[in-house]
Image (cartoon, rainbow, N blue to C red; front, top):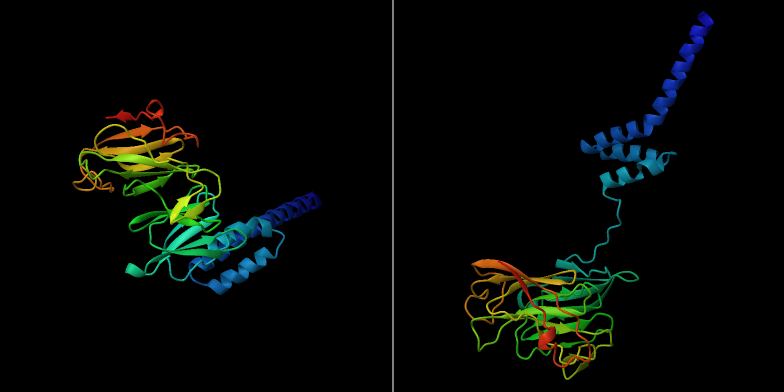
Length: 290
């Protein structure tokens, strides 16, 4: 009986040792984390190093990296920059640097490493979600740049000032709000449509990849429109009761009081053969929700 009891106790002790050994990576990790939290970084890092050299390395790699901030590779783009933006496809980014009249925007390619591809005068650049193009204002012109070729030029907007621009999800249409100087009772949303053809510059104009007669008036109802934004194939915008620009129909900022509704329009894509925009029968009909 004593032999049986001794054997049973030995078996239980061995099983406990096995369980303790199986739990040791977690126990050691918790001990190291406590050391890290109290500021004993050398002690914690030594414990982390032992764990990463153990058979449990794969199990503890991610929690250790999350604690030390090394799970993801970090690369400094610039020591002096602000307002970073990245294209929807992750191929390009932009940031601003400098102050006042000296402010510039730098464009960076993330393909095959990180390299600056351009520096342009101006701020508030708008990268296409699909990559490949960027829009920015260089007073008094609205400029589009092809990021691959470096070609850029002004858009022909028929004298309309471009405000609150937004790209379509596929990057083939640029929407913006503007108004006519001769009509202070309304403004409208317009669309400029592009193609996949090569972009060129002619006498300062951006051509080649712009649909002929591409400037199209998207909205048809009277009054003011503001803050357009794209959700899939739907264009959303607000309908303030007063001019967003504070008086003239030409203004189209994000301000304004008496905002009363949201409208939605689903513009059909224009074909290159379309004359000067869509015909009246194909114009999108906004749906108003009061």
